[in-house]
Length: 263
Image (cartoon, rainbow, N blue to C red):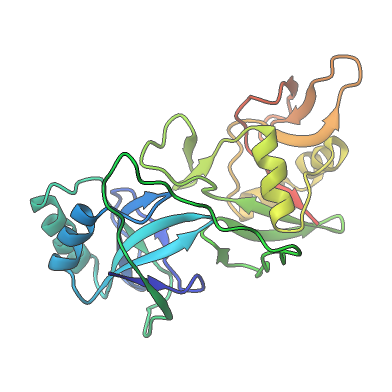
């Protein structure tokens, strides 16, 4: 049986093998991320090693396996090495900005059997689902960050929409973080999920020309172009803009680019 963490619990950000810049905060080991509860074999190994501090937390319909929290990076490294003795190697350490003093737990979850016939039935969405609440200057569901208000619009940045073990080529490392590259359909869906929308080309062009100090202050990624909601009526392709160079370009929906959402 897995103990389940409340979604409000702070799980920090991945260090991805880097040394923590600060000794403050707490440390987690992320040991799995999948659309189903880990199978019995994996669950048994983890819970035998860490019977009191192995958890699952739901993340946009998927399950994230976490072990901790630990007070120091050294202790977290020790736990990571224990997992490696059981051939659980696809793990990494996460660090929170503040020390975790208490955990908000919910129910317990049973592991599934590792069988080809196992089927996962998705939960039905409510008739009137409530939009996820946006909280300024903090991470919500390990994905959204409110950064700044410019020209009357609130700009929000997703950090890692789809956290997977196979990062490249879906992720780019910028500003000491991994940022998601997604297609236009995923970008629109992500914005709608939080009651936001994609910016128009004119809005993001104004941000690039007059709001670059905000992009630098809040360390936004700018290596590749950003999606907009504007379409060229002649080519029927989507207008995009590189926030670093100011270069205009057009892409078809399957392209993988950065996204921002506004309100």
